[in-house]
Amino acid sequence: MESRLSEKDAYVHSGVISKKDNGSLIVSLDENVHCESCRAKSTCGISESGSKEVEISSTDESFALNEQVNVILKKGLGLKAVFWAYIFPFLLMVLTLMVSSLFLKEWMAGILSLLILVPYYLLLYVLRNVFKKTFKISVVKI
Image (tube, helix red, strand yellow):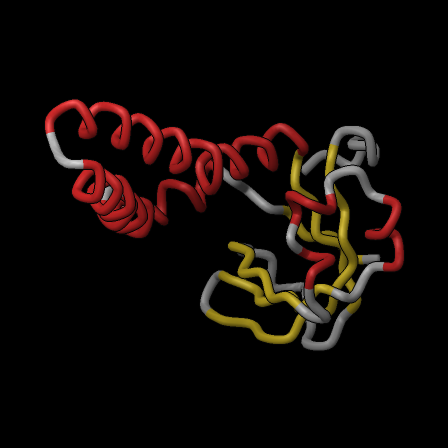
């Protein structure tokens, strides 16, 4: 990611490299004191628990275990991730409920609208490598 990105253009979170695998890094994100004042904390999910781990594809071998780093995600990609994880499944459920309630009993339409999420999240799992390429997370040394 470009070094010219400011905090207006990207989400930046500090962490420690906890594991190195073939071509990927596992970064344990620190508890962030700035989360309380952040406008995106309700969608981010990082502020909800003490520690989170993020897998980052990296071919850079210069990172060492227990090294302090910053994890950077462009804001546009963060909003896209929220769309695919929360907004689209909600819209899919509501649309399925409305359409199926025209043809099925109410309780069957409700169950179908919940069950429609199973193939959706299975599809997301199958396409996880595509999403990893799309949602490129960068890591930089502090």
